[in-house]
Length: 114
Length: 111
Image (cartoon, rainbow over all chains, first blue to last red; front, side, top):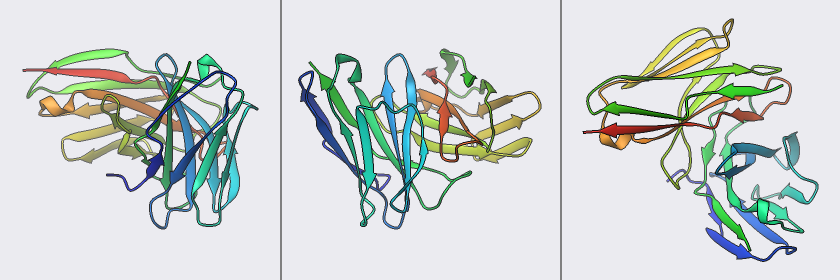
């Protein structure tokens, strides 16, 4: 158990809908990262927050947004969902800002868009 | 562009040694990570290299050559539980925190 908690574990929803994925980082970790993993693409970095502020942005679609709250938990919002958004979404946390900081991954949320 | 290459699949025998290679071309470099991921599970950290050379950690070692854009992960005394995907990731120097992952090498360990 990495200490990073993601909810829900599974989510099935229809195209056009909006969902929110939640992540609680390890106790004391200030950095939260979101990744998307699909079968053909591997792990893709979406966005990183450090102590409530956006720190780095990857290939995150405009339909997706995220935030980190004062208690350090984070939410990833996905809207206008498309079939291609079906993937495993991982959250990871680390104790400090990069570089070279080991990140601990949660078990992921498997999103299926039908 | 950003590119990380590693073999898609490898097979090895229990008790043997296997080397998984990774080559990278990225705009920046703040270090290279190796993660292990069992099917359907979260990636777990194995190693981090930022300077050239070999880092050893039990049965696992990782090597980095920055001038060649090359790394390898060496697994010794293979066990059945080592069957997993091994992900090479480079931390982008320009955007700290942005880990660029390769697609992973699926290792199958046979008895």
